[in-house]
Every structure is written in structure tokens, then in C-alpha cells.
Image (cartoon, rainbow, N blue to C red):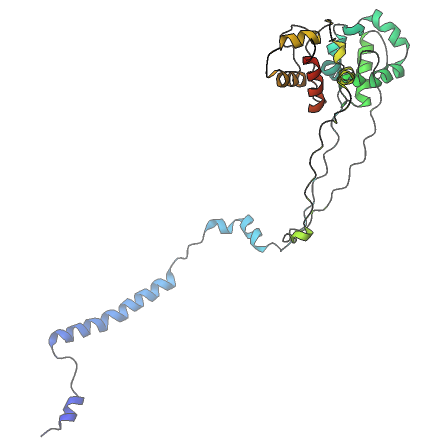
Length: 288
């Protein structure tokens, strides 16, 4: 008679033919599946984003923490206007039609006495202003050199033989300045101060009458009589009752143009500050 404990220790877990079949299938399939998966891992094609291999991307990954960049040299001075350009933009308003006895372009008789005074005297008068002509023809942005070129151009059109003035020597261009390394921004205590606000075009100053004289308005206008353009009383009468008269006239003087009066085109006045324009226009609109 067999021992019961001995028989139990040697009993197989497989009791039926179906269980045997499952064990055989698993014994074959599991190693095969494992081998297939391992093979796929080994031979699998690893995809790489082409953008990461671009030269710029590679350079960005390997660049140092900081680098020095040299800024571009400061832009040079603006090109000076020719005498003809200055005449067309500034002087033509008066010297084409002979406004306020201004000598007309090409009028030899009108220019004869002025030419005899010499180029230096003519240039000085044009820079400083004389009689009804405001300094620099009413455009303070013109350099002495540009004013002199305009005088030579107009005088030579009337028979003078003045030579073109020599161009001023340009200041040496400043050396390029190295930009700060592209290191992290400093703490707030070390941050650069904010840039200063832009300065206004021109400081307001003087009475309305002084401003009208300085900017050359009286060359073509007067308080109570028409010279070339309408008198100030005519302007005030035209805009009487218009609540937007101040804004309209300020913009008109600033931009220039022939307007509705049909006279010689009024040149623009971009050099005059907004405050001065309003002072002059308020004075004009107050005329009765």
C-alpha cells in the first residue's frame, strides 16, 4: 500500500488532454513572441526630426552662454539739398511771383543791385532774414550750406557767376561700440534707465504778432488787407461760427497747400510747434 503523502507530492498539475495542449502551445509561442519583439527593438528605425540637424539649430545648441555683437555704425548726416531743391521747397513761394518785392527768379534787373552786394552779404541776409523774408526762408532746418547753395542758384539764374560754396567737412564717424554680452538681464537695481521722452519740435514763445513775423506769414498776409493770400480778417470771417475752425486752420498751416483761395500755394510749416501754431491761429480767428 502506497503512502498518501508520497502520491500527492508527485501528482502533475495537468489533469486533462486540453490542459496539456495549452501548455504545449504556450511553451512554443511565448519564446517565439519574445524573440520577435527583441528583433524589432534591435532593427527598429529611429526617426529624427530633420529640423534639429539644420546648421542654425546645431549652432544654437552648441553656442556659448554669452557672445559679443558689434553694433552697426551710426547713420551718417543727411544729404544736403541742392540749391535748386531748396528753391523749389522753400524759396519759390515768394521768389516766383515776387511776393513783397522779393526779386523774381531770372529777373536780372531785380537781382542786379543784390548781386553787386556780393555773395557773402546775400547769404548773411538769407540766413538772418531781411525785411519781409524770415530767417532761412522760414525753414530753420536748413543748414548754412544749403541756404548758400540756394542763394547761388537764384543769383546765377539772374546773371551772376557765383561759385558753389564748398561742402562742410563731415565730422569723423564714431567708432562702432561693442554690444553687451547676451548674459541674463541684471536685477532691477542695475537695469538701465528708461529713455528720455522725445523733445517737442520747438518751444513756444513770443506773442502772436511776433510769431507771425518770425515765421514769414506776413509776407503773404496782413491783418486787414490782402497781399497775396487773404487777410486775417477775411480768414476770420470765413471761419466764423465753425466750431472746428482752430483745428482746421492749424492743420492747414502745418500741411500747406493752395486751399480755396486760388493764390500761390502756401508752403508747409512742419518746423513750427503745435503751441505756436495754435497761438497764431487763435489770433487770426479773433480778428473782427
